[in-house]
Image 1: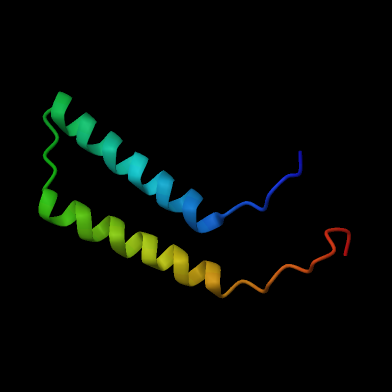
Image 2: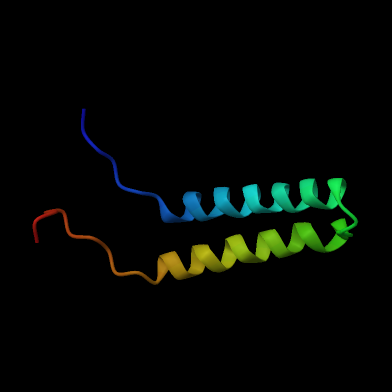
Length: 66
Protein backbone atom coordinates (compact mmCIF):
# COMPACT_ATOMS: atom_id res chain seq x y z
CA UNK A 1 0.00 0.00 0.00
CA UNK A 2 1.40 3.38 -0.99
CA UNK A 3 1.16 6.44 1.18
CA UNK A 4 -0.60 9.49 -0.15
CA UNK A 5 0.29 13.13 0.37
CA UNK A 6 -1.21 14.96 3.30
CA UNK A 7 -3.89 17.41 2.22
CA UNK A 8 -3.35 20.42 4.48
CA UNK A 9 -6.48 22.28 3.38
CA UNK A 10 -8.77 19.34 4.15
CA UNK A 11 -7.03 18.74 7.47
CA UNK A 12 -7.43 22.37 8.55
CA UNK A 13 -11.05 22.51 7.37
CA UNK A 14 -11.83 19.37 9.36
CA UNK A 15 -10.12 20.74 12.46
CA UNK A 16 -11.99 24.03 12.21
CA UNK A 17 -15.31 22.26 11.84
CA UNK A 18 -14.56 20.02 14.84
CA UNK A 19 -13.55 23.06 16.92
CA UNK A 20 -16.78 24.80 15.93
CA UNK A 21 -18.81 21.78 16.96
CA UNK A 22 -16.96 21.60 20.29
CA UNK A 23 -17.63 25.29 20.86
CA UNK A 24 -21.35 24.80 20.32
CA UNK A 25 -21.34 21.72 22.57
CA UNK A 26 -19.60 23.63 25.35
CA UNK A 27 -22.00 26.55 24.90
CA UNK A 28 -24.96 24.18 25.14
CA UNK A 29 -23.76 22.54 28.35
CA UNK A 30 -22.47 25.67 30.13
CA UNK A 31 -23.47 29.31 30.53
CA UNK A 32 -21.33 30.35 27.52
CA UNK A 33 -23.25 32.13 24.78
CA UNK A 34 -22.43 31.59 21.09
CA UNK A 35 -24.00 33.72 18.38
CA UNK A 36 -24.64 31.47 15.38
CA UNK A 37 -24.68 34.43 13.01
CA UNK A 38 -20.94 34.84 13.60
CA UNK A 39 -19.84 31.21 13.83
CA UNK A 40 -20.53 30.28 10.18
CA UNK A 41 -18.76 33.23 8.55
CA UNK A 42 -15.78 32.93 10.90
CA UNK A 43 -15.32 29.26 9.96
CA UNK A 44 -15.63 30.03 6.24
CA UNK A 45 -13.13 32.90 6.47
CA UNK A 46 -10.67 30.70 8.36
CA UNK A 47 -11.00 27.87 5.82
CA UNK A 48 -10.49 30.35 2.98
CA UNK A 49 -7.40 31.81 4.67
CA UNK A 50 -5.92 28.34 5.11
CA UNK A 51 -6.63 27.62 1.44
CA UNK A 52 -4.88 30.81 0.37
CA UNK A 53 -1.88 30.07 2.58
CA UNK A 54 -1.67 26.52 1.23
CA UNK A 55 -1.72 27.82 -2.34
CA UNK A 56 1.30 30.03 -1.62
CA UNK A 57 3.41 27.03 -0.65
CA UNK A 58 6.00 25.98 -3.24
CA UNK A 59 5.07 22.72 -5.00
CA UNK A 60 6.71 19.52 -3.84
CA UNK A 61 9.12 17.80 -6.16
CA UNK A 62 8.21 14.43 -7.65
CA UNK A 63 11.20 12.82 -5.95
CA UNK A 64 10.54 12.58 -2.16
CA UNK A 65 14.32 12.15 -1.47
CA UNK A 66 15.18 15.52 -3.02
